[in-house]
Length: 282
Image (cartoon, rainbow, N blue to C red; front, top):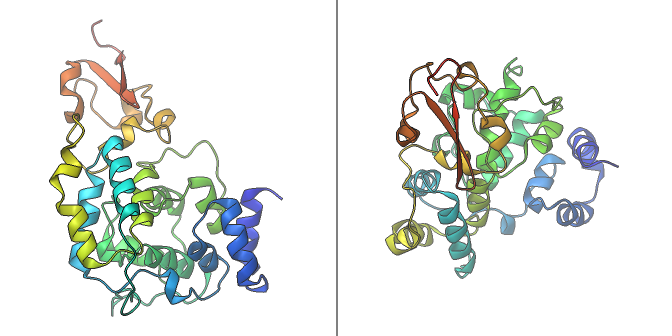
């Protein structure tokens, strides 16, 4: 059975699958066991949930991660995975809003569970480009938005999920026509790595200037600038015209001012390629 079919089947009728089998399947699919339990509609054991920790600290840590380039993300992931695991006094309880009724079944409940498994409430999520009302609506009992596929594109990266996997769980078709605003799973890998860390350990990781400055290179000015260096998104961000990237014909994106006026520059893992815009002087 194909990977997408497995995930789609678990989302539809996973309660019939034993938790032990789901744990084995999670290893085979390289998906956190807690996530697969959520998809299948099973409760997640406390030992797989994040510990209780300060929401403000988690939000600040997520902000810091979203401004890292790929070298820094790899360094940070290795660092946090090396930290000792401390026994939690209590499991993480996801904050809720009194104005938005959370879904108890369906994909809204599954998405809320995936966010909780990373130790986030809606307000603690890193930058996604989605409004709070949109995010609350996605995990509520509302009818799905006609724009849900594009909304999922913005969430897949921070959750560390691939688009095809997340679309399968949401029962959405995954086609090449989707051009996500952002989809890089590397920040999501860091968020998955810190699931077991306490508030004090998050502060230690976020405050370590040596860790973030050990490698020379780009200091990012906007969240998720690193996607333009990522093999996840390189085909999407290969600009074939100004309409696809939403930048005016004679404007230069602020993160590529050094490319010069009239040129558009994309980068894949640090290898920059300059391509002239249509109608610009060569």
